[in-house]
Length: 325
Ligand SMILES: O=C(O)C[C@@](O)(CF)CCOP(=O)(O)OP(=O)(O)O
Image 1 (cartoon, rainbow, N blue to C red):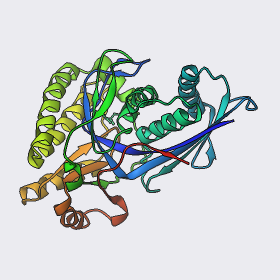
Image 2 (tube, rainbow, N blue to C red):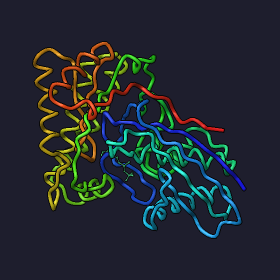
Image 3 (cartoon, rainbow, N blue to C red):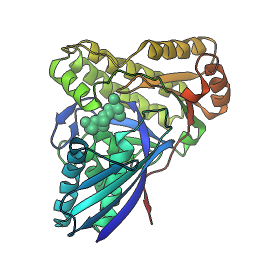
Image 4 (cartoon, rainbow, N blue to C red):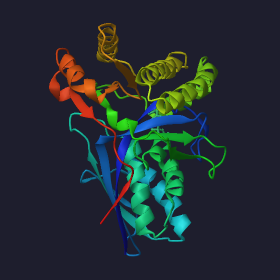
């Protein structure tokens, strides 16, 4: 019996990963840059044993169905291959996200699973190679192995595509991110399917790619200069360009709901009124507001005028992956 357990925190991209060059290896079309947060994390334990006849996956103590288990099994096969182990496993993941959220992020989940396998199988991976393994589970997971600002170098092979910390002299500790959880019933297009449809059919995809390569340079410079306005501007503009690609896909789609737009308009109105805050969005209706810690309470209180408190979550910079007991 080999056991391992790890905790990994979710990250939010400021410059988005949106489109794969290689589906099987999960190699992205462009570099992305994220901020690992402290508010949402996943703890995953895994045990391998020759006594198990198949892989079993529990998420928040619920036995998962065949489809969900298959995605985990595919990842376990990669880890087993690296370790030369052929035993099946029981995986138990606990998402520490606000219940109302529906914010279960695949990034923290797959990063925690990679970390747990690293221990259970005695892989002794460097953090760089742990990032590469997590990438095979879910692209954005490769960034969650580090805390703070992280850049995922797209590379051009399994060996050269991994995340690294961005030098920031802990500037991330001066920032905050407020989540506005937009409750939405309709089933979103998953990020995996959304980016694939966009790459395959969107009229705007190539222009997105050109812009993303310029934006990431702006983001690097903003972090080096600790220039919050520059980082906020490129974050919001990059998100809008990413989402614009979905409108020109075939069939077209959007992640935005009326309340998403209400939140985006609120942020822009707050900025007009002198509040230094910017938004970003991913493959869902939730809106995340980047601001400076010193302004975060004022901004939170202003948001409470338009959104109920249970939909507002304050987050700050988080740590990288942690091995548990
Ligand atoms: O996080 C970002 O950079 C931007 C997104 O969140 C925008 F929606 C995409 C994350 O995609 P992910 O779930 O990692 O896809 P996978 O590799 O197909 O599993």
